[in-house]
Length: 317
Image (cartoon, rainbow, N blue to C red; front, side, top):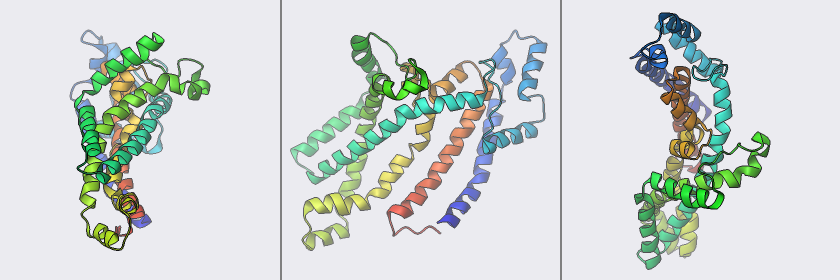
């Protein structure tokens, strides 16, 4: 397994190098310094800001400097829009708020969706199955933004007379955990409510497909109860598509949910990146997108490794 993981990492290094190269080329189609300062910027200011980030140096030198920063996790470049604040500091301060929303939402969504899917598959074709699927379709049919607007009005404004949440607004990081239910519970519930519709239908389809496999027929013929077949044998063998579904969301756990963080004033990575794009903050955009690309590649490798851990039939070679 370790040799397979090492090979996958080596194979994906050229892929990541290509992604970073395309990212840097795309961000330099228009002069980033000129876009930040505006049309009326004087040449002295343009030269100064280019020197700060090294944009006056050859492209290949800038390329290898960015790779060095990413692989060494040294993000000492200063933000253009936030004087005196490094991109590394912005990164460190935004990871925890993002995880305070996305991680509980993932755990809640996965647990509830898998449970509902099992119940629905267990009672397939009956009223409870049809009712659960109708609720799932309704949940996924309503726009994410609609849930946010209604949640802000009924869950935040009417109850607390606040129009936005800020996890660390009172007492800083020390009291963040104590403030979590008040500031983060509503965004987590909204995120879970939207995702449950999609996940429940997907997991139910997986369970229904697994129910026709030969091992299910064999277990039933040997006298195993339907409950044991569904919740022991079938669930274990359905873990690969479940892992795939969960692992595809892993990079977004750290990068955060853009809509939730913007509308609920959560200082996470998604909101920081959104503000950086609005403010043409080139250093923040470049490093945050490069990190996201790396996380996406690592999540794909980790998915393959987890396949082998949960299913002995999978051989990594």
